[in-house]
Length: 300
Figure 1 (cartoon, helix red, strand yellow):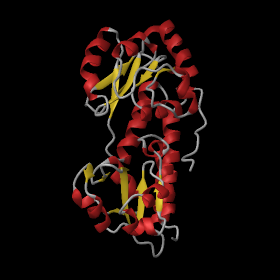
Figure 2: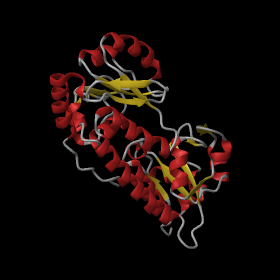
Figure 3: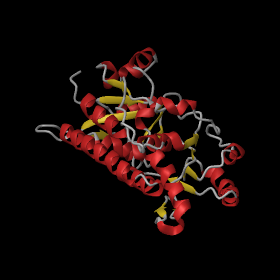
């Protein structure tokens, strides 16, 4: 299944470079760019960044969606969308190579407050010496993601592009809401499996739980607790989900595993792999929500 649709890039990065050159020429004529990140830190740039390093795939997608792809000089090994991101210099995977980041001479580092926490403290200290400001995001829900996109747009001089991305996402979210709440529609009982062995599912009050709610799904694992929850298969079966969403696991794999065929969603074939990339907190997540809303209402 191909998730999402590509967003036509704007020439923001080229404009950013020209803007930076103009700023250098006229001094303080241009207003500084500023935004507050997930840590409550106000980040201010004198001019649009020309060398951006992204420490998580979601931020890479956001940067490219805002037309900043030509300014992105470093990404992780997991940054595979859009395809152009695969050829950008790699700075690590789950473990960020701080040396590689600083060697790229970034004038902006896009990070995750939770995903890069182990590297942020040291990176912050060294980046200050290198004059490489860090902007960290950590969206807990879709509203937080939309806010982060606007903030990154403001900080990079790409506000019009950010407004366009958010508007397209809001239009798609409205379509998902209409699909989920149409006449006679009742919330569909759903379970989202993020890992099969051991079994981990999406619990309550987290980004993916918000995705499920916006798709009109009743997350049957929400009462188990916040975040992601581990449980035995028997308990998952007892939750009686009508629909099963997974990160990567296809229906055939579940049918071949002992016990899974007892789950109604597996018996009726209502198992839908979404792919890890579809649920990243980036612009394509709105398309994933619409897809989940439509799939959950497809007849067995």
